[in-house]
Length: 423
Ligand code: ACO
Image (cartoon, rainbow, N blue to C red):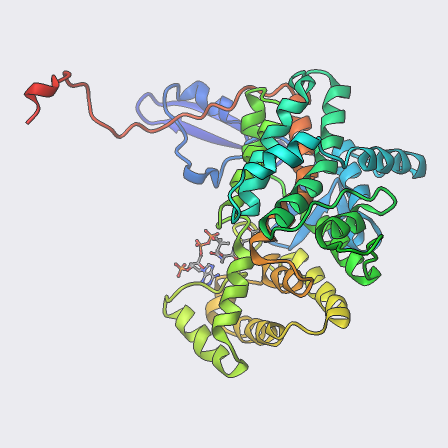
């Protein structure tokens, strides 16, 4: 039996029966009955903006899958570039496909010299790396005017490769610039993650060699952050892309959304919170103050997950691997204690508040030596592949331009008053 809902317009007595398909009802069907009456949904909390075959989340059960593959299995056995290929193409690559994709990415890691010498030099010495990333990604569109041809699949694919390859280079350039260090060119003999670390940290040594455990940690963090369906920045990518902007401009807009502290900045807030708690003894008092309404437990709770965020579980394990090499981040014990106290507390369990992806990621980034301002940049690097997968999917479906409606609450019509007559 087909499941459906029926809505009746009590003004006219007319009804419409709308089938429930894939857990959704078509707003177009409702609109036939209710022309000119809009669905008021601030923050789009109950609106499915699109159909998508990329990422599946079951927030109740704490499940996350890319293209059907459980995140745990991808984190265990895959690499970031393999996952990026999967997100973009829908299937895991066979060896030859992965080799070709990896090679292409390698070739495109370099940025135009004008970008490095002139564009970056224009920033103020203390420019935030995320601001530099937003604007440098937008500037890439001027170097690749062909990117405007968004209706050509091969042109789209080439820009996706360029963006995935160049964002780490721009990210590292932004960091080096902000601390006054010279730019490090990409080393094409290294893997994606190794090359990023090399561009970040290389000093006078001829070749940068990263500890394999740290490289693996970066790979896993990149895999976990590669996509998360219709979050704020991905929706931005789709909305800007729906106007047929080129992918660099759309991606810059998505990075701008990620720059917001409500989206890409929560792990920084976790670090600040743990630092302010300061000691294990202070944890119960801190939890009590949160329950009394003094601030939030940063890194806890999620709009979608009402269970342990599956990414947080994986990240917690990665943290131990990293600390084996770097030494333990002293804030880890406070984080573990905080988690223990909160999970045992009725306030958090009744509201189904569990650690999210950000609860432990900041601790790892800090142990790896990344400055706090770079945390959202580290998020943007892998999320670029997710944004591009959604952008391509949206264009392949020939989606209409995003154009929501509003509920107008302003003045009724009134006559213009000349300046001299205004009191
Ligand atoms: N600490 C204490 N209480 C909380 C927290 C928290 N972290 N999160 C939610 N609550 C409480 C709210 O006060 C509210 O309580 P009430 O019903 O008594 O009023 C209840 O739980 C529901 O909270 P909402 O704000 O309605 O939940 P929402 O889904 O809108 O918010 C959010 C989700 C923004 C993530 C929230 O849990 C939060 O602020 N968490 C801390 C910040 C954070 O970690 N953000 C990262 C999210 S992951 C990411 O973006 C990559």
